Image 1 (cartoon, one colour):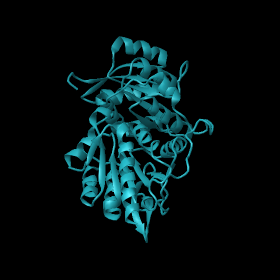
Image 2: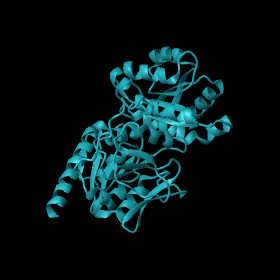
Image 3: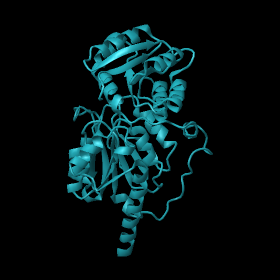
Image 4: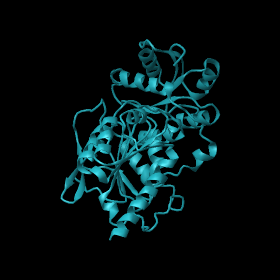
Length: 370
């Protein structure tokens, strides 16, 4: 940022959390906590008065919960928000909703040992504030927010799962689509998956996410998509018409078992500081899928997966990279481009249509040869 320190407002109903977060922020040379609020109504006045660069926002608070406040904020005055969530099933579902509404990222605060737990998360907290400060935040129209359909909203509201089209035939069992994403990635992944046909090739996904949140993420996507979306399970066969998401806090890779692809999910060490790591998934795709792979690199901070995406390209894959204008954070796509890994650089909304068109062309060529 061109001006001095990143100016942060902390919004949380817990005095202890406000104090701890303020202390963590003020220990950094490049940021300062310029105010705290114990509920969104107080926060609203502070934001008007102090014009912060980033706010941290608790989910459950009195008078107005964090989700209602976030929805109003992103419609009326969009700004970078890092959610402070709880590591519970409900906390995970609410966090997914916050990301849909435009929050840049989230931190899962511990349920026990709050003081020691938050201090252990200090590096993660300030890193996410730094990313939020440079993120491209967009206004979320009220109509768009209301139109987001959730699992359990009723079959009539969910997209119909159509019968298989003549899209792929036998090709769908050979091809694998590999997606990597980080900050801003949950909504970017949704944008890609909802446009994939029911008989899509298998899709494997690594989204940087901690344990406890990918189950809710997968369930939410499964309720929106024509394909089946689930968390990856070690040893299961990777099937067409399915998308498999790396479980939070685990590494996810592909392996061969005869003519089939199978999931490898293990407790391997972090790679590029990440677990799951895009590098791990893409490296395995280069080795075992080769020219039958398609790579997609979406929004995110850092360089995780860029070198491995180049390995995929060298092995014969065709790769799509999200363009800067449509990214929340252009770090991972930028690095993929710098590594020469991209075949096409496209706005987010054009990636799925371009991929489907290419798959249709490949399918036509296969059928003409038969």
